[in-house]
Image (tube, rainbow, N blue to C red; front, side):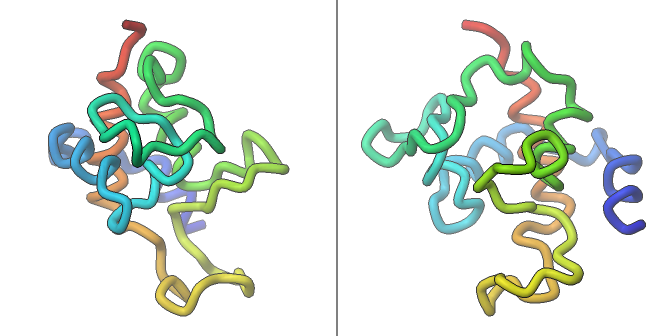
Length: 121
């Protein structure tokens, strides 16, 4: 139920694409750049385990991007990407993330706002 509330509540007016870009590029804050290539992030720090995020805003809606962040297994049951949404009931989770999401809701919205700006280049 908590995940559904996060998916339906999209406080776009509070989201900040610049903060989202900074979060994506920060290996310690969001972990995204460990697996994904992200425009503007240092090339030597970018991963290639996940899809390249260039142009993602042209391929997916903000709602679809949010869904992938909150519960990526819904789109791909075999994904290795962690769920950035609620962590209820998970047992194989690092101590720092037990019983809490990887990122707060506002940070997820900032990331969604930034990724939505990434149109085909």
